[in-house]
Amino acid sequence: MLQMAPIALAVVDMAGTTVREDGLVERAFLTALGSLGVPLRPDLDERFRRSRGGSKLAMFAAALGGDMHRATAAHDAFERAVIAAAERGEITPLAGAEAALLELRTMGVKVALTTGFSRQVRDVVVDRLGWTSLVDLVLSPEDAGRGRPYPDLILTALLRLEVDDVRRLAVVGDTANDLIAGTRAGASIVAGVLTGAHGRDELAAAPHTHLIESIAQFPAIVRSAVSSGER
Image (cartoon, rainbow, N blue to C red; front, side):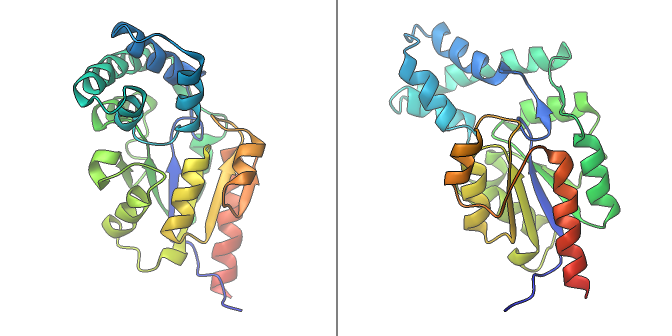
């Protein structure tokens, strides 16, 4: 049996994994569609929930039948709502998130935050949380090509942070799309957390190595892999 390579990079999702938003993202999504006169059908809510973890612009495009002009207008309204909420202090760290990020860095593991938010929204959120110096890299779909469930964000983090082997990756997120992306990227650890958009059944049905209650448990999993690789 091949020995697990020591983890060198943790790719960590934001909303629902490290960042508490208490339904703000879903409300902003539906409100943005409503601003265009789109009837708020029950299927839109379910479609949004299933697509969590992916590019927000792609989510609007799917909801609007591929009409990119209207999707861009809805996305702009969505971003204004999320930025306003962040500036009002309505987006906060989940319990244990900052300690987990610090612990990973203390272990010598590089940390990349990934999100379906655009750069503009992402930077406002990270700045308001005071996390700029807490991580090595922050990526949005526009930095990588495609959002989740594609592996682009994870592999872009690996390339930019000069990690030499996909087996040295650990990925954590709160949606099935996060877990699919981590598996497609070849990560040794693909952990789902139960603090966000998808519940245990949905995460269990996606490819994964671990299911954990919160991000606070993630460093111990990474530490175990680091230690096994050092033996």
